[in-house]
Amino acid sequence: MPLSDASLGAAATAPTVPPVRVEVPSLGIDISIAAESVDDTGALALPENPDVASWYRWGPSPWNPEGATVIASHVDSLEYGLGQFARLPDATAGTRISVTAADGRVADFEVQHVDLAEKDGIDWGQVFDREGPARLVLITCGGEFDYDTGHYRSNVIVTAVPVPAA
Amino acid sequence: MRTTILAGIAAGALIATGAALPAAAADGDASLSVLHAVPGVTVDVYVDGALTLDDFTPGTLAGPLALPAGSYSVAITASDAADASAPLIGPIDLPLAANGNYTAVAHLDAAGAPTATLYTNDTSTLAAGQGRLTVRHDAAAPAVDVLAGGAAVVSNLSNPGESVLTLPAGTVSATVAATGTTDPVIGPADVTVAEGSNTIVYAWGSLADGNLALAVQTIDGLHSNPGGVPAGSAGLVATNQPADGAPLWIGAAFLVLAGLAGAALLRRRTTAKAGL
Figure 1 (cartoon, each protein chain N blue to C red):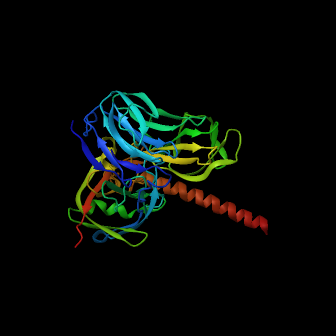
Figure 2 (figure 1 turned 180 degrees about the vertical axis):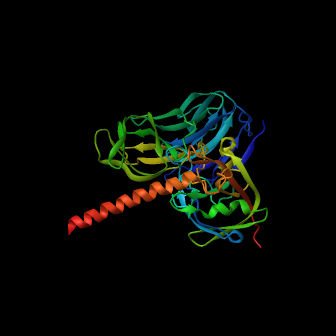
Figure 3 (figure 1 turned 90 degrees about the vertical axis):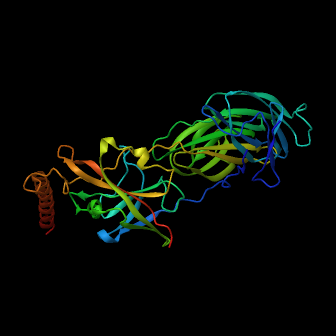
C-alpha cells in the first residue's frame, strides 16, 4: 500500500506548463495562445479574436507525459474576418507543428491525420482525453454552415504526435 | 500465507500486505485509504487480524487499496504490539460497498480520546472547470466554521462531521475558526481546489495541545470535458455558400454593423456639436 505525506502542500504535483504560441511554418500559421476554461454552455471558451487561440487549461499541455493537448481557434469571425486556422485543412500527414511555452521551451509535433467531423458525432471525451499517448489536437470549424444558427456544422480536427528529439 | 514486503515512501516504513488483501484491483472492488491523524503516536494497523500497516506515523496517508466489497475488521495497536489483541482503537467494522471509495481516519474525538471514522468519498463526476472541496473535522476541538475570503463557507462543523462543496477550480485561502468567530485556530492556508478532483481537507490534532493541523487527500479523475468547440461564426469557409460565393446574409450583417457604426458616429458628431 503506497504511503504519502498528507500535510498541506506536500503532495503538490508539478503544475502544468501553459503553451503560449503555436506555429505551423508550412501553412504560415503563427498564433498566440490564451489559457481558457469552458463558456456558459459548457463548450470550450475561445477568444473573440481568431488571431488568439484557446488552450484548454484543465487538460494536458505538451510537457505532460500523457494525454491530448487541445488548442482551438476561430476559423472566422464577422468582426475580424478569416482566422489563421482556416489553413488547417491544408495540413497533411507529416506537417510539422511547434508549440512554445512562456519560458521558451519548444515541443515539436508532426501531423498524423486531419479530420472533418460533424459536431453532433464527435466523442469529446476522446478529443479532450487526459490519458493515453501524448498528442496535440488543433481544432477549428469547417464544412457546412448553418445560416439559421450562425454556426458551422463540423469541426476540423488535426491530430499530431510528438517528434522524437533529434 | 503469502506475504509481500514493499518499501514505502515514508522513511523506514515497511508495509506488509497479507493474503487477506489481494494486490490486483478487480471490477467492483472498493477503494480504501487510511489516514493517521492521532498526534504523537506511531501505530500498527491490522485488517482482519493481519498486520497491514507497520509503524504508521501521524500525518501519513496510506492507500488507496483495492478491496473486494465486504466488511473488514480494523484494529489499531501500539507499534510494538505483537498482534491485534490489545488495540488502542477498535476493532471497528468497515463495511465497504462495491465500487465505493472510502477513507478510514484514526483521529481524536472532540474530547481528545482516540477513535476512528469511516468516511465515504464523493467521486461523482464534476462539471468541466469545477472542483470539489470536502472538509472533515477530526480534531479535539469544538465545532468550527471554515472561512474563505472572510466569509464562512462551512458553518458549525463538529467532530467527526464533514461538509462537501463544489467550487470553480482554483486556490482558496482558508481559515478555520471556532463557530461564530473569525479568529483563526488554523490558517489562513492556501488550499488548491484542483479541477476535476475531490480535495479532502482534514482538520486534526488538539486545540488544547496546540497542535491543530491540516491534512490533505486528493482524488482525481472526476472531470468531465467541454461539450463542443464553437470555432467559427461567419461562414467564410463554408462548403455550402450561396452560388455567388459571397454569402448574402454576411453582406447584410456587415451592412447592419456599418449602420450601427454610422449611427454611433452621428451621435458622437451631434455631441461634439452640442459641446461647441
